[in-house]
Length: 223
Image (cartoon, rainbow, N blue to C red; front, side, top):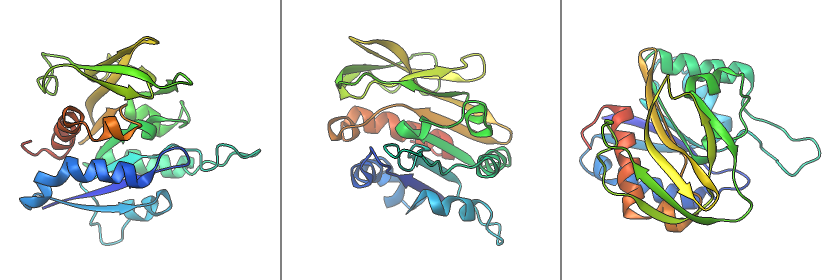
């Protein structure tokens, strides 16, 4: 059985909403005994990655941005450079990392974490809009079905397509962007996915299927 550590929720993103979505994503893997999921906060991550016993999670899922208190006069970040280096070392050593939605946001662009992701959040429009997500045929995860759409916070991202494989794209009245990509990092695996913000998208069956496929790729399981 493989172990997943999920860190979900931040100032702008409800933890229970994300947890409900992720529980649905991993439900078949948990039921058949292939995955075990534990939830934690960002403050617990560092100790999880440097356990003296050496028993590390097989996959870490991060749905939380770097800013702890984004509306404060002095904004604090939780991911220090040493934590970012620990994350990169964990993945390079054979771990897996899935940066989900806000897990791509507000992290230092020149830091070890963003370098590992090969991409990062740039901006989103102030208003939610109908966003269409299109899997790309010809990629390992692009055969997950037809396009699907829902009201969402449309993430626009920077992504080095020469160093990763983009399998999902997004479009709305505000423009187009990459929405999902994956690659090897050292001996480990990295997956990134920009949707979703609202319950409509987080619980949509087509989204669940795409997210499940990415979790399966990260953990090297059959979906």
